Length: 414
Image 1: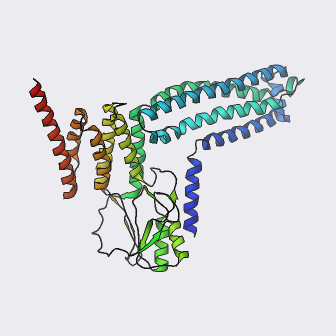
Image 2 (image 1 turned 45 degrees about the horizontal axis):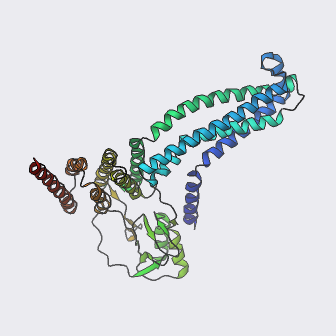
Image 3 (image 1 turned 60 degrees about the vertical axis):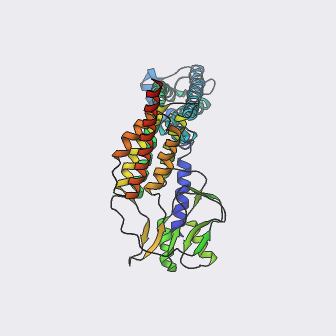
């Protein structure tokens, strides 16, 4: 039960922190708290005394203070609208050139969210300050400290805007987006894979009994601790029937086990395999492979025709393949006595290769630059698996045949 609650909380935490509004909301609240604290100090005894000692910090006219704060609020609102209208235009262009799946990489950028939060926080600060400046206030009763602080914040906002222009133009470069996907996928693989090779698979008969899904959704990961605990508690052996990233329909087999269990226990097992509505690289590194594949395929489409971007995506894929060949998934969980309890279907190298490289090859086999790139990268994949070697050699032979056919055609035309 505790593991199920923890899994639910983790999913909600990712949903909340992954929202574009999370960081802006937190920063705006901090700005509001800072504004109220500073305004209180500005109008308190110590604040009034400080303004009396430092005469240059006083604003004698409330109307002047209101004009300054009103101008700042209107200006920052305009700056915010302009900045993020530009961001959405650039993001839309990048998504149309690469893939809609990279939108999360662009919209979820933390720096953009922090900048938005600072702009909104400045607006909140100005509006709260504006409500405390009363008509007819003079001398020390005008919140001069807060007004001067707001001016300093606006100067910082202007410099932040200048850097933001530089950052956003750099962050939407194709190589930066591809490198970001590569980095997140590699991080997910480091969590899911181990450098130690797995032991020989244990010979087990197919598990005959099935727990069907009670809903539809994306299977991305398993709460391993919860499932292992349930297997030990009820003396069961189970296996997950689908690959991570698979879309599971209601009523489809999701978990197989060695003997039937009551419906209440089945529900507990299903809670340890939560179905999501959206995919994420975190916990499902195959999604990162698919993102890079779609970027390459979109770049090779006739409407885009950008083999250079496709080559960048292919290189990132092969870097990830190299890591995958040297690291292995934790696919079997055992109890303290060493008995096999849980089997989780991992993405094998062969499956990843067929779903990515072969898909890109279907789009790019007519492009000479893609042929040369694959012909250069494929022999560099070091593997001891005969099946993988044979699959790589098949692609190499297909590339070599296409290149030879092209050379013959060129000679014939000459």
